[in-house]
Length: 590
Image 1 (tube, rainbow, N blue to C red):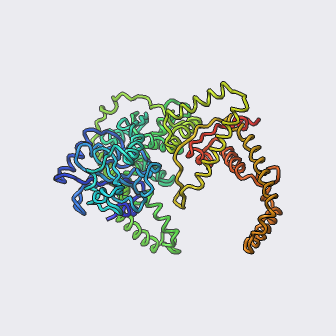
Image 2 (cartoon, helix red, strand yellow):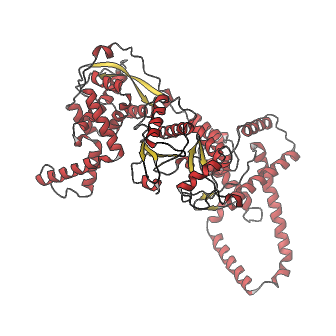
Image 3 (cartoon, rainbow, N blue to C red):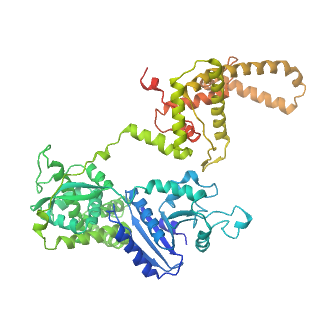
C-alpha cells in the first residue's frame, strides 16, 4: 500500500505519520503511552490541529496520525521533533510525509545519492532511535542479502534498520539538515496580545487555549459578507467586554494583523492613536471569528465560508442552470447541495472546524465565573518587531547561510576566504608578474569550473554540481581578465597563421564529403554574418569569436543583472564555490 499516493487525495498542508513497533507491544497501550509522553512534555498552541494518534491493523499493527498545519510550516517540523522524541523512548520505526511526499528528503536534497528518486524512495526513510535513517542500496556483494536492491517493501525496510549506522553517510547528512530546522524546539515562541473580548470568549479561551486556532482560521477564510452577517446577529454578549491576554502562534498573529480593520455599530471603537485602539481592533477580529464558529455549530451551514466557496463553484459549473435565486427550483437544488456539503464534512479540516465550533458553543453556554476573569492582571502586548524584514539581513542569511549549505562550505573555510580577501585588498601589491600569474590561474580555474558544470551529468531532472570549491579574489580576477584576453588574442593570431601555412597540404587530403561540409559551413557562416547575432559576441583582433572570453563575460553580465539578488548566475557560481562581490560602482550609479 502506498501511503504517499493515498495522502495526495486528502487535504493539502497535512503531515502524516505511521509508528511501527519493532518489539512486542500492545498497540493500544503503546498509543496511550505515546500520548501520555507528549502531554507531559509538550505545551503549545497549534496553528490548526494538534498531534493525534490512532491504531490500525493493516498491513501490520501500527499507530498512525495526521496533523493539518494549514499555513504554518513550523507545525510540520514540530511534528517531526515530537516523532523523534517518541522514537527515543520506544523501540519503534516511524515514517513521516506530507501531500508532497517525503518533505525531509526535499529539505536535504543536496546530500542525497543519485539513485534515490521518488520512485525508489518508498519505504526507505524512517525515524529510528531519534535519528532519520535512509535504507541504502547494497554497495558490496556482502550487502546484497541485507539491503533491498530495487523497491523496498515495508517488511524488508524494518528488518534493515538494525544494520544501519545512523551517524555516518547520507543518514548523517540528512540529520544535520533536520537538526538545523528543529534545534529551536521545544522553545517555541508564542505571541501574546492584549485585546478586549466579550467575557464569554475570555472564558472559552481560558478553558481551551487551542480553540484560538479555529477562531483565527474561520476569520481568515470568511469573506466580508459573512462577517457582516454574524455581526448583525451576534450570539455573544458584546456589552460585557473586558481586557484580556491571548496567546497565538506567530503565524496566526501575522495573519490576523494583516487583515483589514473592521467597523461595527455594536462594538465600542476608540479614535486612532488611542492606547486601546489596536487592542479593540484585534479583539473585534477574534470576536467575529468566534461568532462564525457559533454559526457553524448551530447548523447554519451557509455561514461557513467554505460552503460559500462551494456554492460559487457550483454556479460556475452551471449547477443552478438559469433558475432565479429564491425560486422553488433554486431552493431545491440549494438544499441538495447543502446536504452533500454536510456529508463531505468528513474532510479533515472541515471536521476540525466543526468539532471545535461545537466546543466553543458548549463553553459559551457555561456559567461564567465573572470575578475570576475581571481580576486577572492584564499585561501589554508583546513587541511585533520580529515581523519587520530588513533586506540586508535577508541577503546576508541567503549568501552566507543557505548557499554555504548547498556548496558544502564550512564556516571556517568561508572565514578564511574573507580574511584572505581583506588582506589582499589592504596590502595590494602592484607587481605585474605575481598578479599576472595568479590572475591567469583564477581565470583558468573559473573557466574550467564553468565548463565542468556544463559538461557534467545533467538531464530534465536537474544537473549534478561538480565537487570542490575555490577561493576568489575580486582584484586579481579583474586584472586577470585583461591579460587573459590579450593572451587569447595572441594565441588566436598564431593559430590563424599556422592554418594559412598548412592549408596547401591539407587541401589534397579533403574528401568529397568534407568539401561538401565545408561549403555548407561557409554558407551558414555567411548567413550569420548578415544577421545581427554577431554583434552580441566578443571577438579577437582577427574578428573571430572568442569563446572562452564570451563565457566569462556573459556569466559576469548575468551576475551584474541579478543586482545582488538570487538569480541564475548567482546560483551557478555559488554551486561552484565562487562568491563574487557586488559592483559598488554600478550600485552607486557612478
